Structures are given as structure tokens and as C-alpha cells.
Length: 579
Image 1 (spheres, rainbow, N blue to C red):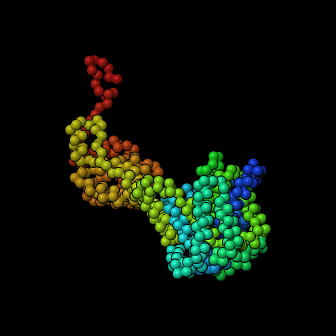
Image 2 (spheres, one colour; image 1 turned 30 degrees about the horizontal axis):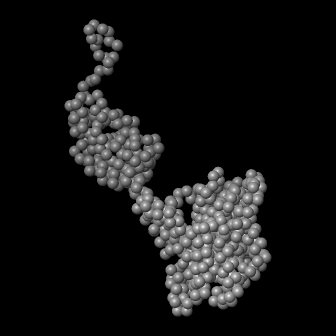
Image 3 (spheres, rainbow, N blue to C red; image 1 turned 60 degrees about the vertical axis):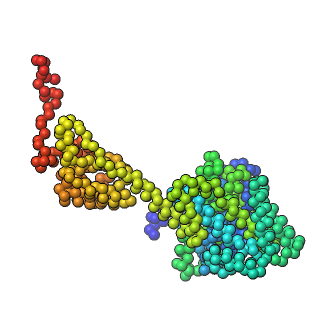
């Protein structure tokens, strides 16, 4: 990479760093934001523990991510309201990576993904989020909710997690193990925690019932000596010293593909979460490129402390907004409170039953599904319903990145089809102009005019070719192109092919109304010289028709037109002088 490119990237990144007004905003409404951050921390604690356990790196990894990544993303991100940390969507991607590359592989993937996110920020890629269709987002969210729920089945049933990297296979094996040796204690705790969360959220949305349910389940398991309810186990008091000991340069090549998947997911989920936060408030608008930078720095730092990759968390961000946060101080407070818990309450956290955390995540998965939004998407159009279903099914059967790619590909194909159907190729009557009825009838016998409406591009061009080459029994074809909205190389080549076929049959093709922006495309493939014989271009259709009539006169098909005198040339009437 040249020094100029390095300087340009460095300049761009420096421009995305927090400025004086960003830091000054931290002092705005401190009491309100401190209370919001405390509330979010209480909600985030069981989620951080649960997602850390689900990822395969342990509860301490989830806490480290929530503290380190949560603080850095809050400080350097592009949203005043975003709360970041371990999420269910990221856990879905990490589980197969842990199975294949182990914990050190996940840490390396997180570091590489962070670097990629910083590069995306420097390239201003954040604005691309606006092109993701709503059905893809809804299908993606539905698929994630299903995967998160299925991932909790082994923990909720109290069985060791079976081998396998496909969530459907793992779930089926866990159910079979439970059927052979039921653990009703674990299942009861998981169901009870999920039920308390779901019922409480309906009646008192402001109360963090996840913490209440987890504390109650832990107390019951300890007092009643429920040995079947396995606890989390040892959780270190404090964060480990930052270290790069996990990094193996020889494995970087094989881990690049998973890192790209993690970076893509982190960018997608974080920008989606920030957009949701903007929609819940008035006057707040995130900077997508700064958000990518913040998530990149967070993911570079989190692995150094043993944390898993992080993203913006929609559920925690929503809680942050609903509790009145209006600056980054709330998200920073959330990370600080979790840091205090890590250093002071690790022994208590270690006693939480795994089944209780599974219940928390089951309830979280259920609450992720917005039935009203899904119903609206399904009722909108068949295309939207198809995109939603395919994206959700791909999320469940394949993985999240492939699901988004499939959803975008199907959405793009359907959109192209819809645009292509808007293209029209219609025959239009000739303008009579100053011709007599007899002359006009004679012209209409030998000249035909067609109007092209809409886009002339690869998805619609071949249909146009078939219709144009079927023209018969005429000497001149006039193409009215003033309403062509866009034309690409394929459309220009198809047009050239059609004109050449007509010329071989002795049919002259003239075009009118070619726009300046379309001339370059037509000229690049050699179509412009065919549409404009002898370099003549016609701004309007009447001009092209007059040229067509001259051609027919020259060919002897039509008699020479009588000379038409203007008013100034006509002789005077009744002795009056000519005007």
C-alpha cells in the first residue's frame, strides 16, 4: 500500500474520531443518562452471561465483551444511543467457528473482523445499509430468533451440548438425550424464568424481570440444593490483562473467511440497531461510518481481554432509549456497572444455573419476533413474502451471512424483474404536421414510429429486440427515445443488433430525442452511428419523419413533395402588398 493511500486512510479515520461537541454532550442530563445506563446494565447482565456461555467461550467472555467492547463502541461509535456487546446473532456465527478452530480461533477472528470494520469505515461503506430491503431484515431477524431459541434447548433441558455444528442437528440430539434421561429440574427452571420474563414484560415493561427471574432461580437452586440445575461455574474476579498470546500468524489465512463473515454481521446488525434507535427518538441521527469505526475498535480490543466479537444490540439499545437516554454517557455507564459486577460479584454470578440463562435467552428469542411486522410484510406483496421466508429459512439452515446474501440476491432479482416489466415498446401514430391527408396516408404506409418508455437495460432488452425485429413491410423505422430513462451496455448492444438486422432487410432506422447522457453508451458499442446515419441526429420526432420522407423520395418510393410557400412568399390578395 502506497504512502499516499495510508495517509488518506489515516486522515479519514481521524475525521471519524470523537470531537469536542461529542465529549461535551456527555455532560448533558447526567442524572437521566446515569439512571438509563444502570437500567441497561441490569438487563444486559444475564444476556452477556448467556451469550458468553452459548458461544462456547464461557460466561467470563461475555462479560469481558460487554465491558470492553461496550465502552469503546459507546465512545467511538456513531450513535448517541447505541449499546453494544455480545448478541445472539453473533453467537450463531461463533458456535461453528469455536467447534472448528477453538477459542483462540474465535479471538483471532474477532481481531481480524475489527480491522476489517475499521477499513470499511475508512471506505465510507456505512451508507450501504440503506440498500438492505425490509423483508431481508425481517427474515434475518426471524431466522436469528429461531436459531437462538434452538441453541438454548440443551441448556434448558439440562443435558450436555451434543456434538455438531448445525443447530437443528444439535437440538434433535439434545431432545433424544432428554427423552432417554429427563432432567425436569432444569426444564422447570428454564420454563419458569422464560414465563416470568414474558408475562412481566406485558404488565410492567420498565421492570427488568430477567434479573428478577435469574436471582429467584439461583436462590431456589441454592436453598433447595437442586443438584440437577448445573451452575455456570468459576468466573474470574476481574478482567485478564490484555494479551495477544492467542494470535498465530500461520492461521490468519484460514481465519480470514470467518472474519469477513463476522465483520459483515457486525456491520449489518450494528447499523440496523442504530437505525432502530433513530426511529425511536426525535432529533437523533447516527453516523454510519463512525459506527463502523466504533465497532471496529471495540472488536479489536475485546479479544485482547478474552472477549467474543461484539455488535450493536437491538434489545439493549431499545431499553436504553425507552429509559430516557440521550447521550453516550448511558452506554458508558452500562459498561462501567458491568465492570464493577465483574470485579465484585463474580462468586455470586458463578452460582447462576445454566438452565436459568437458557430461559432468559428463550424469552429473548421469542420477544425478537415482531408478529405485526411479519404479518405486514407477508401481506404486502408476494415478492416481499418470498424474500422474508427464504432469508429466514437460509438463516436457519445455512448461516447468517449466506442468508443475507441470498435475501439480497432474490430481492435484487425480483426488483429487476419489476423494473423490466415497466419498460414499454409501443407503436405510435405519425404526426400529421403540414401534410395533406393523402400524403399522411402515403407516409404511414412506408414509415412506422415506435416509442420506448422506461429502462433499456439487460433485464428488458431482449424482449425489446424480439418486438423490434418483427417489424415488416415498411421502409423506415423511427425510434422515439426521449422517454428512455436509462440504458446500459447490454441494452445498447441489443439495440445495435436489432438495427443491423433491419438494415439487412433494407429498413432504415432513425432515432429522435437521444439524451446526452445516453450518447456515450450508444457510441461505445457502435450503435450511435447506426441510429444517426451520416452523423445526423434529430432532436424531435417531426424532424426524423421529415428525414425519413426525404429518404423515401430519394429512393423513388414517394413522389417529390410540392413546394410549400410561407406566408411571406405568398402573393398579395386584393391588391394588398405582401407581408
